[in-house]
Length: 113
Image 1 (spheres, rainbow, N blue to C red):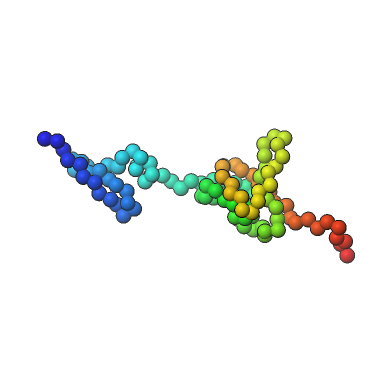
Image 2: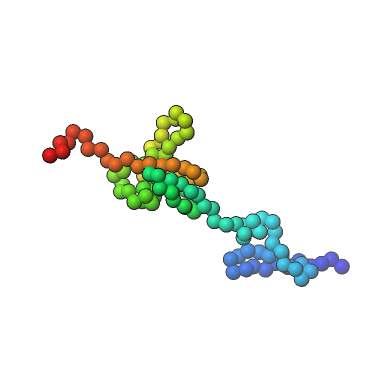
C-alpha cells in the first residue's frame, strides 16, 4: 500500500506536506520560511546605517541621513572612477559597505554681507 500525502497551510500560507504522521516543508518552502530579513550596512557622510530594504531612492537615502532635498547625494566609486551623482528618484540596489556622501546646495555669486 502506498502512503498518502496531504497538504496543509499555516497562517502565512506556507504549504506543508503531511506524510506518515510527519510534517515537512519542501526545500524551497523551507528556505523562504526560514529566510531572515536582508540587512545591509551602508554609510552616509561617515555615519553607519543598518537597512533592510534592498533598494532605496536618492530621496530616501537623503531622508535617512536627515538631509533635505536641496542636497546632492553621491555614491563613492572604487579607484579612479568618478563618484556617481544619485538623483532623488533614482533607485539604488544596496550592497554591504556602500559609502555615500552629501553636498549642500551651493550659493555662487552671493556676497556674505
